[in-house]
Length: 509
Image 1 (cartoon, rainbow, N blue to C red):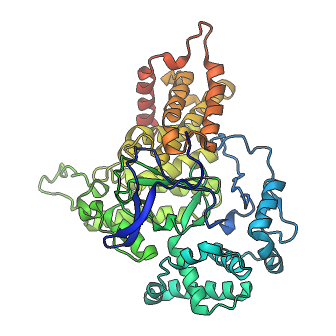
Image 2: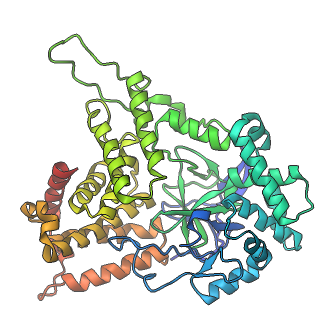
Image 3: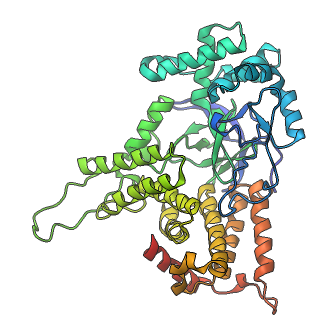
């Protein structure tokens, strides 16, 4: 059963090399809640998401091409605040709650600046400054002020990083009307930038930022033992493995499936520290940096390409792949995005003699390409790559079957196959390549949904919005797939179908 909001199975204590951290106050089993906070100190949508996200419950309204985000929001429309025309709400209740908690202090300011919208971090600092100015800070203000601000590190980094912090701080100071010094506001901005978590939907779509002093006390490890999820504004931290009493809780601040040098660079660039966790102590000898040994050239048996982890070829391939991912973030046209990611896949397909299928950034490019295929209606390609990820990538990158990322991938795959099943009947020409495999789509969908249902309690929580969405779809499929003899397809042997799906992955990915 899901714990009540603001569950805390931790205590704060000194942590070697990091100052302080959170530690388990009792033994915790895999999937148990370490910490839950019903309403963190600061939760706001990204500026780019304001027109599609409720600024109170954080319902994200864009629909998926296959319905993988559920249909519970299909009839919901976002109503923009008539005062500022910047934020929006999915209901009158959400609007009222937000107005009482904070929006009444910022509405006139946003209206004055409209149609311009302030950057996300600036809006966050202004919200806190206005609450403090109105005498509504309470205990959270002291806790927030104790967070590291890293302004010294920003200043030492110099360049655009320091200039941006100065510019955003000046904006927050000026627009909020605070009497706090420029240095104080800079420190607040530094705390927001270096202590915020990414606010995500139940299906891990990034939509904003979250800052809370207690959650910010959890230290990073590339070999993390817990993971953060959100259910609306509610923050949850759950264990990925057994946690003993008095063991330190750790989460990932970055993508820890990346190679060693990339992880170190990301942490140094954004958080100003060098990670010395167990994984990082291995350097480039971990699986994240694995390189295959290619066979020598047949015409020159003495030739052995230099493809060690630190070789120029590996560095150039890796840099080109990450550049593809970075540029893809800024592409709005689905067809253009599909084209760019396809180019990225070809880069690694041509390097497959030495680049493992699970080494980044190949898996991330494949995942994003699969989603781009869904958006552009390339159904068989989408299915081939999603199946490849299911069978060969996720079990390596996310060994726990209940890791939230893996569970969401499996859910998306189940809904994609359900969509393909419908096309096979209504528009068979769109999935003609799959006909030869003779897939029993009903069995496959049911098998995947059972797998997701079996893991969602540990990944998202049994009463979460994600769990309700999965159960709703499972109930629909259960009714559709039940047989006259009362025997559900879930009781059948699924291995023959899994063999067919592996063949699809091999052929189409």
